[in-house]
Length: 412
Ligand SMILES: *Cc1c(COP(=O)(O)O)cnc(C)c1O
Image (cartoon, rainbow, N blue to C red):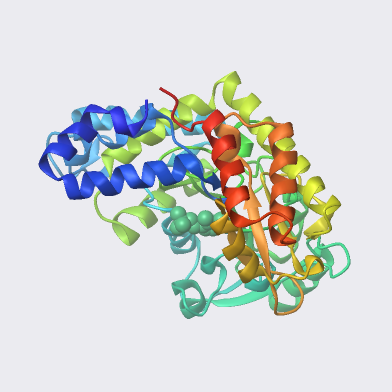
């Protein structure tokens, strides 16, 4: 059901037409442009219903059965359901579903395992590390001593030999695997082996790929990592938020690192929406979705490469890919602007080598809309046509409108 026809939108429209207008404008933007941002998706109306529910009113510091507030008996059931569904979905002994975001989940993982000043080995930011992997602008870079590993210049693949060499030389307290833009599967067993060799914890930041894991389309880090951090709003298609998965021995430390160490009261509406999303992710339909997401990404990557863009690692195993438009004579930022004018919304990102910026795009949202391989081939052609200036902005915008019109994210 489109938000436009939801009773809530009518209530808002009567009371606050100014804000209702904004809401409808954003729904229109999401429905009539192509959402190629790799971290975005369309949650189901059921997830939106839980998010907009009266559970938002409830204060619930603590954990089910041990709250600092009264009246938690019903929201306790919601949180237990979310935890049980997450544990079953990912095969984890313990799940914490309270993290407000992916970054909060990473902060909690560090708080559970590290002390300020500890050395941490993670993917360097120019290679695809997240802000929480040691950016000087983030708590991580300020409070810990981060060492960055990278990717091989030729293949674009993680340089596991460098990871091992740096681990031996720097003896980190923790090693982080996971990235905002690495398009290939990660070898968790090899990371575990390196971590064990130097006595380090292994933290998997699976913010991007956890939805693929749920659908069986990417390897599960849970058997290998001491703590898995994730978001619930990327490929997983739930509400905006985070979560942590770990073994029984770290359960209490992880829970205390979330509340009371890094957060206050849990957002019970969001936790209920996470439970709904975990329920959806456990269905055969979601397994099919996750595999379609990766199949679509492969077609999109191959299409862009055939059009002359340089695709890092020569393709993708996941929902995302990184492409350098320089061979078409356009720099990343200019390319993003031109594509946006044509109705194709995506991000620029750091490229592993050199100062120029590339384009990062993903197929999670388009696949939720029902687009498949033929549409990906068409998007690749349109994309390259716009960058080469062979298709003018207005014609491209019309094509995008036609395409999105056939695949509405919230059909009536
Ligand atoms: C998206 C992402 C995060 C942060 O998630 P937020 O919810 O935006 O805080 C952390 N790590 C990685 C690898 C990510 O891709």
